[in-house]
Length: 227
Image (cartoon, rainbow, N blue to C red; front, side, top):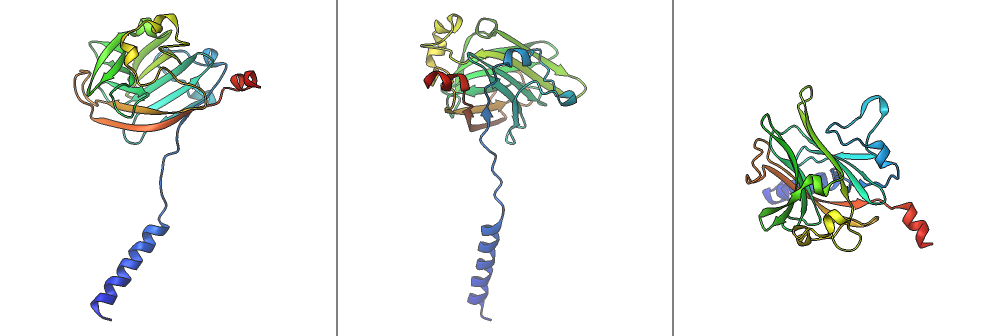
């Protein structure tokens, strides 16, 4: 067999291996609707998963960052829990495939301080949109020494500006700079997931970041109203 024929056979074999190799792709996460979210979730910085009792109706772990997001929504609020084993800041941003114009919720927990902050992305930087106490109806952040997991939980309005926004967010000028005004059932949005694995300094550039698409679940009550 001449060298050219050997090359052709080798390339054909490689092509067939690639052709039949399984493709591993993460499914698009869905934030589901649950009318009982207010009863399910306690925003205490700890996510309950024991004895088959799951605090949130859905969760997913993002491979690129190693962070786990738990979530759900009801008629007016979304309920979010974000966990990491990193020791720095960590958060998620809604509405933009980049930090720019994302409505970004970020938390940190250290021996000296702990907080959850609402930011709006401005280019490669950000602007603080105000105290989370004024923007979220409930929130907390905590550190589990047994598992080494830091977790923040936030209950946040589905609409944070414009028509349908609650009073405490509608007049916030910084939130006017977000790419979208809120989240609607059934729609698909961009989600930025990012963290700095070692420092809580928010000026430090992320060590891990990814952008994914996610979908809001359908709200059966809205569908009934439209009939």
